[in-house]
Picture 1 (cartoon, rainbow, N blue to C red):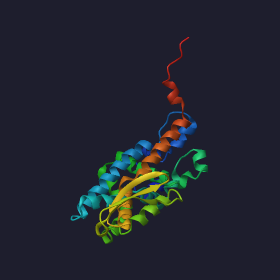
Picture 2: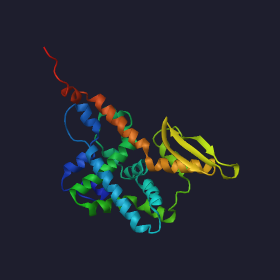
Picture 3: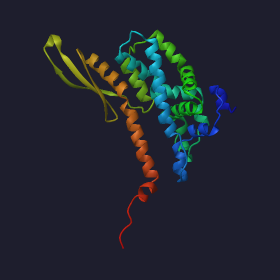
Picture 4: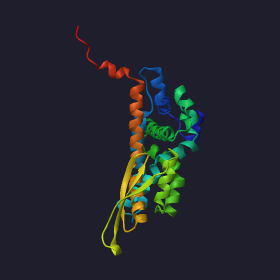
Length: 254
């Protein structure tokens, strides 16, 4: 077993799956040639992670409604949480990546570590079965699951959102009052939370504070910053590797 296999207590039957999970897209981009990277495995691992965590929460929190279960799942599968799991495994040190990506701090980047952790889940699943992947996921998530048992309600969603976003960028989210309506004794406030010019969500409440809290909860459910990051990485990949786009361009007439 190699050092990482010892850390995760799993021996791969097909070592190529582990290699694929640990290969950052920058390797292929810098080489300017076809080859595997961990993006497809990350896609698969994300789905398996969502399933396993959803199944666990459904079976252990019998009285919680759908909305609360969604919030609990968001805490367990957030990029910040996955980065923490990756750091615990020292996953960054095992990644294969391009020189430019490594020089820019890629081994410690939250998105890189989170993607690698999900790719590792996908690799374990393909190399074995869902039961084995579930065992790995729940083992890594055990401290967080135990904490949920003690504190199932997110008592500070604004603080949690700020901590999560500041793990990506030093900028803090800003809460903007959109409207207020109703009589003085029964006003309704609508607030939106904005981060780096991205509208993360809106919330309503009988006070500004309640509306801000609701907006933070919606933001953590939507996780729009992750979708933007995926889009940015896709655009960057296309810029680095324009040859694929050039192949489909029709030849000029003589």
